[in-house]
Image (cartoon, rainbow, N blue to C red; front, side, top):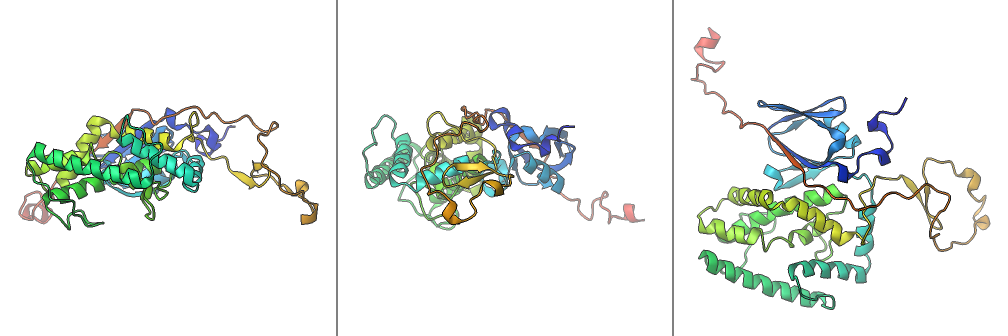
Length: 371
């Protein structure tokens, strides 16, 4: 009898290209029913096959059982605890691919100055379409980016009629410094960071290995978020200020609506993979559970290698260059291009009802109920 799918080899799991890109759940209870996650709220009950979800976003008002989390983890599904509509990232679990290919690639790029500079140039090139940045230094790129944002601030100030006196913010607290416009900018940027963080973790990359930013646990998150500030958070903050909407919640809701209208989530996925992946290669592959070898590159795990090991270090042949390919091993994995897809499912329960007051006839403490 074949193994149940949740105990199958990771290679047999659904690849990301075959999955629903993301499921967002809010004001609901999640439980497990055999091989499906059951989402329950006062309005509806929805069954979702766990192996068909790439990323599960748990929003406010969500309760989840241990059984559901275990099923999703065994299915290779990323689980992210987020704010309303995913605009903040609080915590995350296992990545969907269950492999380290993209992470290894990111680490390889970040530890080689030439390759790191090329990725940084590509990031700046996305902000200067049609311009050649292939020979620019980081100092030149930073200067050009500063000049671009100074011009954008002035243009949006004229367009919206909101005065601009310079950027003021306090790290870690979106509403601690500056005027209304500055605080809205900080709040919108914080929400954008959460979205980028969720995507990066979901793809299996590291939030901390940045190419332009460095030293922070979310350096790569800051790198990716900077690609979209000029078109997303900057005009949004000016527009909200002009309308007198100056609460942090206004910035979060405004950015949430932008994400839905522009399909920003899919763009972030595409851009992260395009920046890290070599042309024609995709690292959305399951874990292979191999052992590293200084000569062969890697060998199979779960094998007793005692018969093949030399009896003493003197019997071992000197290290040589890693072999280019193994001809007697299994066929190479399919590394064709894969994407997160365009699908996004949201399951949102009804608004919570206010608790009844003591004077209410429906309250347990009322005379009608206690007599």
